[in-house]
Image 1 (tube, each protein chain N blue to C red):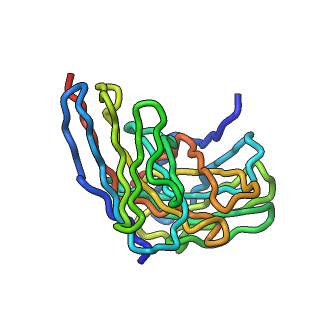
Image 2 (cartoon, one colour; image 1 turned 90 degrees about the vertical axis):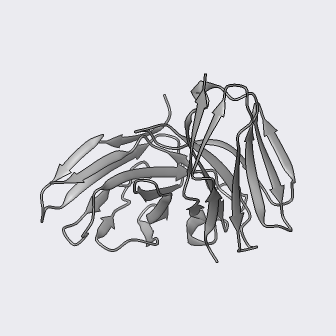
Length: 115
Length: 115
């Protein structure tokens, strides 16, 4: 019930391509869905986040699409660059009144953007 | 320069030793968290604290202990009771505010290796 399933595990695209990373959840009580970007040996950095009352959110080249009825959300990276090569994690939260707003993470997607 | 600092960056522990990982933030955030990351996996919550002098167990608290004597600091002790402590440890913090969700920001991490 509290799992977030992320796919694919790894992804290789050419520069300029649009990688898409998908996440699915079961618990409809989740109310906050962030995406994090992590470079090797570094801490995750918050990239973009969405609430369930919005179907899409864009920030620069990053877009989250959210499908509440399907209980799925995805990250799209427009005009991908080699510098975007990193591991991406989706996450979900039940809110600050549930275990202090802990984040439940997907397993991660290792993205490689070839020049 | 505001942010979250973790020290040390690398830590080596012998069997049977307790070690303490430091986490400090100067963001004036109320809540602090400790997560553990294993290779190829998402992050899992160890402990969290929403206010000074109060903390709660997360999903994998066995073998760990914490304290929250100051708002800025949330050290994690990995005790000898933790049977598989080799992992990447990440500290995060967030501002509680008046909304139901909280953006969590991560430190650079400490890599702990058991010799």
